[in-house]
Image (cartoon, rainbow, N blue to C red):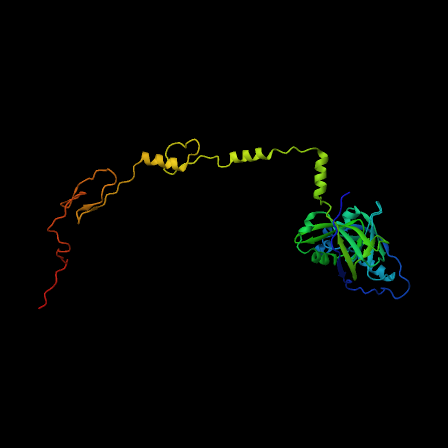
Length: 338
């Protein structure tokens, strides 16, 4: 037996729709029952302007003749109806939105037709009823997507405001953020007629776990019943994982040959590089002072004449050389003042 998760009850208040107030429509006499057969038609097929408004609620559209008939029968507000499929005796309760349907037709939301298992142009029986004010309703979302809504209380309060009645063992449909959510009505109180009126009522709403919700304990029990599960050794998994990590081949930017097999230590590689290629020998020669940079290691010093001065590591400085004793010349000679 799957356990269900109950949430904290929420109290909603749904106002009476315009035109209500609990006053009789007729001039006097006890109210009588309105009951008429109609051909059902989906609001989408009827090509009416209020398609979205009708699909997003629990109300139907009837022809104008139904309004005249209701006035003659002295029916009491709020107008509530019971729609029954005579073939399978399935029923659902609803309100009326407008009296603008064609004669002989009743426009129903598609989700209501799915509950009744009827198709377009099939016959249904519509009868006026009086339902008790709702006190409690238990709802069960069909999918867990409903739990992703950030503020389900506000969404339900706005969506259920479009409904006039709720029936046990039926599925209503609400719309939010361009998505539709099907919700089962599992229980209502009072349960004398298995239906309640939620207009101008304070209704406590309780949630059950979604129909596709599976607890972890049930999942583990099902896994045990299916048979033992052999798990691989954790040490072997770690060894295999370690062998795969960093299994590539390292190369340097200076390497020109094929990649070496395996990864060598950085110290060994650097030592071999030093043996293969000697360090760069830089010799800076100063032509004016007749000096050069001392040789690096045992490398011989190359002596070349530089502007008449021989550069060497042991070159002697001219004793007659006086620093900054030259003469300067201008490109444009100075003019003598007269």
